[in-house]
Image 1 (cartoon, rainbow, N blue to C red):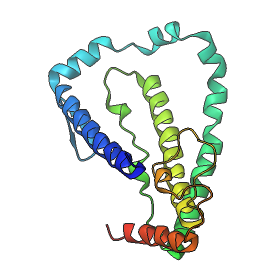
Image 2: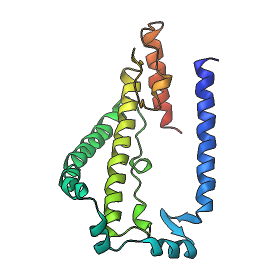
Image 3: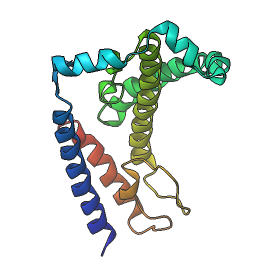
Image 4: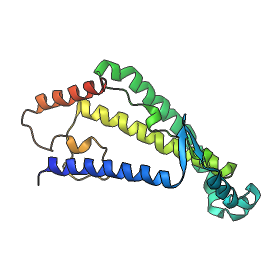
Length: 195
């Protein structure tokens, strides 16, 4: 079996996984209406029954969570600065290179605040994590598109958690028609603008 066949199988499996996730969402009985998640009343009632009040929540939080909270929330400053820098980079450079812009909203999804079983502190915690993880995914995609434009070459050693574009890059050490292939990768980025 070739690498291309395996990648095609992975794509088919990812599509099947997405369909399975959508079916599971149907079992949880909610729908999305204008970016707002709406649960059936029976689910809302069940959520309210398991919700911890803020006072009770404070009594159940592990001490190490309180100790590390300033460190965790202090990271918002570098995260926001990085977000501003990577967004500025994309806005200023991608049009010059002809690279399709990454849609921030596809990565930074804020919807945990609609869960009735979370108290206000848990909702803020979830929103912070959603922002941080989403922003890093957004930055990762911007960086992946940049790598595809300038240097679409795999590494000699296997790397963990490579981005989705990486598997399609050129093999390490394969110099056959290198510059033509780089131009092909660049033109693929340009056609994403038209999709």
